[in-house]
Each structure stands twice: as C-alpha cells, then as structure tokens.
Image (cartoon, rainbow, N blue to C red; front, side, top):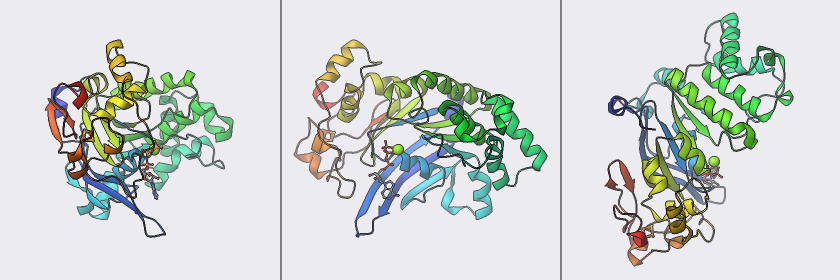
Amino acid sequence: MAVPEQQMQQEPVVVADGLTIHFDLRGGDTVKAVDGVSFQIRPGETFGIIGESGSGKTTVGRALVGLLKPTGGRILYAGQDVSALSSSQYRQLRRNYQIIFQDPHAALNPRMTILQSVQEPMEIMRDGNPASRRQTARDALERAGLPPEIGARYPHELSGGQKQRVNIARALTVNPRFIVCDEVVAALDVSVRGAILNLFADLQKEFGLTYAFITHDISVVAHISNRVGVMYLGRLMELGPTGPVTEQPLHPYTRALLSAEPLPLPSEMRDQARRIRLTGEIPSPVSPPSGCRFRTRCPSAQAVCAEHVPEWRELRPDHWVACHFSTEEGPPDAS
Ligand SMILES: Nc1ncnc2c1ncn2[C@@H]1O[C@H](COP(=O)(O)OP(=O)(O)OP(=O)(O)O)[C@@H](O)[C@H]1O
Ligand code: SF4
Ligand SMILES: [Mg+2]
C-alpha cells in the first residue's frame, strides 16, 4: 500500500526524535526500555512496529500518546515539540492522539454500561452536553459495527471482538487524528481478527486516520502497514517500506524474525531465512550489550560490533538500517 506523494510531503503527524525512556527500579537498576529511537509517522499511513517481546514497542506507543514522559529526546505533534507546549495547548493537541490496547476487557470499566464507557472520553474532555455525548457514542458504536442495543449491556456480556469494537468506538468519539494500536487483535479469536483489521482499514479511509500498529505478528504488519520499524532491545534496527522490509530485509535481526514466520514470504526467501535462527533470550535491558545490541545473537557479529554502535544508514530509498555490514543487497551474510 503506497501513501500518495502529497501526503508524504505534509508535516508528519508524530515524530519520535531520539526518544529515550528509562525506568528506574527500586534496587537502583535502570531499565533502558527505549534508547534513542527516531522516526516520523506520515499523515494517513499505517506505521508498523515489530520486534520480540520486551523490545520496547509498547513503551514507544505509550510515549507517542503522552502516557509516558520521555527520559530523553522529543516527541513532536504536527511539528511542535510536546514538552514546549503550554498545558492548555497540550490538552488540545493530545486528544488527537489515542491508543487502543491488546486486552479489550481491561480497558472497560466492568461497572459501566457500554454506552457509559463510550461516553467517558468525551466527559473527561468536557465535549458537548449529555444528550450530544449520548448521540455521538451511539453513532460511534454503529460505526464500529455494533447494534444499538449493545449500549445497555455490560462488558462481561460481550465477546472479545465486540469489546474491541467498543474500544474502537471509544477512541473515535474524540475525533482522533492518530491511533496507536497495540497488539489490538492478538487476544482475539482468529476468526474475528480479519473483520477487526478490516474495520481499522475502513475507518482509516473514512476519517483520514494515521496508525502506529504494534504487533508480534509479521503477517498482520505485512497486510496492514505502509512502512515498518523493527525494534530490538530498545533500539530501531531497520525501518522502511513494508514490502522490502518483510521480503528483502537489510538487518540480520529482521531476517531472523522473519525466519520464525512461515508466511507470507516467497519460498526462496523462506529457504534463505530458515538458515538463520534466533537463539537464546533477548538480553536484559538493564545492561544491554555494548555497540550493536543484537551482537550477542547475531550470526555475523565481528569485533567492531562490540565497540561501535552501528550508524543509521539509508541503503535503499526510504529504507534504513543499523548494521555495520549490511549492504543494499541485504544483511552481511546474504550480500
Ligand atoms: N513501568 C515499567 N517499569 C520497569 N520496566 C518496564 C516498565 N514498562 C516496561 N518495562 C520494561 O521495558 C522493556 C520494554 O517493555 P515493553 O512493554 O515496551 O516491550 P514490548 O516490546 O511491548 O513487549 P511485548 O511484545 O511483550 O508487549 C521490558 O524489559 C519491560 O520489562
Ligand atoms: S552490527 Fe554486527 S552484530 Fe549488529 S547486526 Fe550487524 S553484523 Fe550483527
Ligand atoms: Mg507490548
């Protein structure tokens, strides 16, 4: 899916500029969950974020919508540094940036009816009046593909797919511009995943939404994203258009990740990918490896990889990688 040229030239909806998020633990250790991550998300695109568990995807997603304050670096909304905004300017902009999480149940208050839950964000933002909020909530439920009578029910009376539709309706009520979708179909039955992904795609077209789509599932990312960023241990390893990243990756880590996925790779790529396996656990983000963070699991690592952090290089148009030895042909042992 290509984003039209015109949209590419517009101001990015959100920018992470050297985004760093560290968590101080009680014993004195620091978790370097995200360390110097930079990317721009363009209007109308779906930006996929992939990587193993613990690579920092959710932390980035939460920071993008203001739920976490960066330890370092900046977040820009429509070109404006969020930390430089007054609190009223920030509140105005922040409403355009929403997040939907993996567990559709956890986000809903079990003691509220569905209609009350869907109205809640508007109440917090003091939008409209009770009657207009009710109407907006009903319209949003309908747009999310739910029948009106569902508004009177409680969360435990709904299926997982229906609850996720309610969460989508909740996000829609405040007219967002950008939504972080964090593993939004991972907890759902396989049979309803396709319908929910289609709903996201339809809403994007109708409302001109921009998404950051966080997922473990490369087939989901390949299906829905325009571009994809690959994270490992708090850093971005590769970033580029989805087709090239998932079919002809540049980074050894991306290739190893793809080797775990039987689909949707072309057969020749699968054979190549099969030779590389991700072995061992992802190291601790409290004391990540020096130089290239992937070096302890990389089949191509050399001495320099422990000494120097690889530069971020654009080896193909709009396709970036952080590896000392990748060439435009691919990762080191494939070039
Ligand atoms: N509030 C916190 N306090 C301390 N450490 C945290 C906190 N939140 C996240 N972390 C740590 O930061 C790292 C990144 O976590 P994050 O949830 O962003 O990973 P993820 O890529 O979303 O993983 P998953 O695919 O399992 O959801 C992990 O090591 C995690 O344990
Ligand atoms: S920089 Fe070195 S360790 Fe890192 S991915 Fe490239 S070859 Fe592997
Ligand atoms: Mg996560």
